[in-house]
Length: 207
Image (tube, rainbow, N blue to C red; front, side):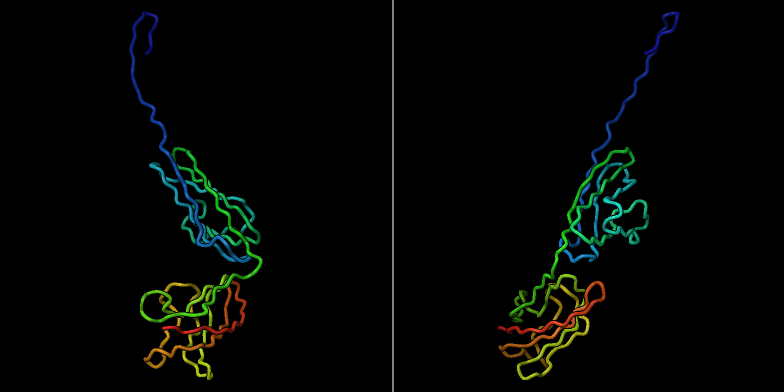
């Protein structure tokens, strides 16, 4: 309301709208890795206003790589390769200049963490039907499987790492299911940094 020297008055109304809530959730594809192993970070921010910036820290630690983003100055999914256990923080800002933050800790293991099966049961029940492995830091492995007499039953020069249920030996040889027995595996494991390591062991095929 305003009044002039002649006591004339007039008024107007307007509304100030409170800014919307903003949230952000930070996740990664791996939380325990070997030193220098790449990890994909993903910030999932939500606001009714457009998200205009992501601020990542600590700068200079973990080698942030923004090459996978369309806008390197506004990247929601950089990758990192920490040398030591590190807690990463993201701050998301929307067009109203409101911010939200989240953190995640990537732990560095001093030694490998490997899962190699001691048995598997290729009986078609959808559980443990293939010879698969999970070797920390491995990308692929040259896999060869032999019977107790040294006959080669299966080979894959580049079997992907991981337990998915659809990779690795299915327990068959020449179209028939192999016998219940103990078998030998030989792996040449290729790691994320190009290093290779040979691994050998035995497992049991169960029915």
